[in-house]
Structures are given as C-alpha cells and as structure tokens.
Image: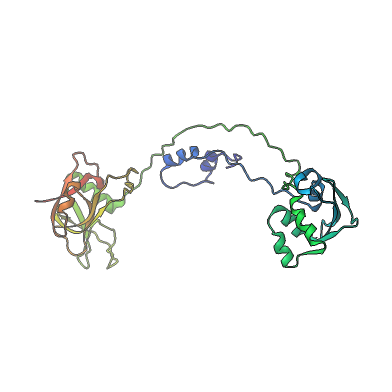
Length: 312
C-alpha cells in the first residue's frame, strides 16, 4: 500500500497468495487513488495555548473589559498565568498578578476544554474546574479569543516521493488437474454419449457421479454399469441470481434450472445433477421425463452434456 514492496514480487515469492480469478485481481490495482498515511497527532501544551492567546484575540469579545484573569493549571505541563485585559488589548503574563477571578484546573482538562473535547460548564459542575472571584467576569472570557489551532508535528514536511512505475499486464496461468481413474472413466464415456455409474459389489448401490469407494459400505466400487440416458426429474430449482459459472467465471443468464435427474437404471438418491433446457422452465416438475442434449464436439467433460430437455 505504501509502495515499499512490489505486489508482483510478493506474489512470486509466495508472500502474497491468490485464489480465484487472477485477471480480476489485476484490475483492482486501478480501483483506488494513492493512500496517504495519517499524520501524527499534534502535541498540544498549556504553554502553547497561553502563548498564542495574544495572536488570537477577538476585538469585539474584549471590548469594554478591564480586568486580570488568573489561571492556575495543575499537573504536568501546568503553571500560573495572568490574562490582563484592558482598553481592548490583551497581555498574557507568567504568574498571578492581582486577578479579579482565578480558575484552577488540571493541564489535561484545560487542553481538553481548549480543543472542545470537554465542556467547561460540565467541568465546573463536576468540580474539575474551580473558580474564585467574580464569576460574571469569567463567563465573558469565553468570547475573548478565536479558536485555537494545534501546532503541526515537529519538522513535519511533505515528503516528495517518486511516482511509481505502473505496468499493466494480465497474467494467464494455464492449469491442468488430474481427474483420477474413476472420474476419468466417467467423463471419457461422455465422448461416446454414454453415462456410466459404478456399482458397489457389497450392497449393489449405484453411484452417479461415480466415487472410488461406496459411501455406505466403505468398500471399493469397481463394477461399472451404463445408465440412462433418459430419466426423470426428482428435484429442481429455478435460479434467478446471476452467479458466476465455476468453469468459465462468466455470469450465467437467468433464470436457469438446476435439477437432479434419476436416470433409467438408477433408484433412490442415485441422481445426476445438471441443468435443464432454459425454454423448459414452465414445464419443469417432479417426475417429468428428460433426455440429455449432447454437444457436437465432446472432449470428455461434464459440459459434453449441454443440458437435459423434457420429452413431450
């Protein structure tokens, strides 16, 4: 994010891992403007608050006032000050000089009141701010000064950074996955428009799609049986949400029907999940007879079956 580590280098070294569409991730580099880290919080001191008062005088606020205001600031960074107001001018003096009203408060609370994070009246009511003398004069002091602006961090300067070089590149990483002997035999049969299930030698149960081991008996299912290709719908769902196709990454056209088909020769839950022909949505119902529609070019993949269609 700060530009001190190259993203591609992090990916190549394994420090950055990606799952999913790499092409989409590359586009994400253009989503946002440059990140600017937050600046360090300014250090506000009681000394600075009193030191800037003369430059922050509000002429209308001090008009007609002639009095000395004493401040006793306790705790770390505290001290004693006198704000002398006379003839429309303000002088800030160290120490107490015959004040007509004196405010006593901790350094922490004085800074908070100045910054607006602590209400002065609340501090007075709770006893955190104490007043001796003419309370009426003190209420007028709230109009004496313009808003205090905290100083910036010491030595704070905008660091000039070299513009990063951007290289727009789409990575294509071809990948191949082994289907294994069982699923491989099932998919290979699609090239010849055959649907094969394997059979458990112990319970006789068919598995479609086939699995190497019977899910109930936990023994290897080594026998093969051709089923279908026709069958019936057992369960069907109409999808209206445009979820991405897991094989292509593209959003599917909606609505579409995902269904479980009980092919001839199978029974119970020995069903094959696939899609139903989009134009058959209105005719879809449990028990409807279906048949597969094969693609002309078959490569030994589940997509060799384009979809199932209802037999009128």
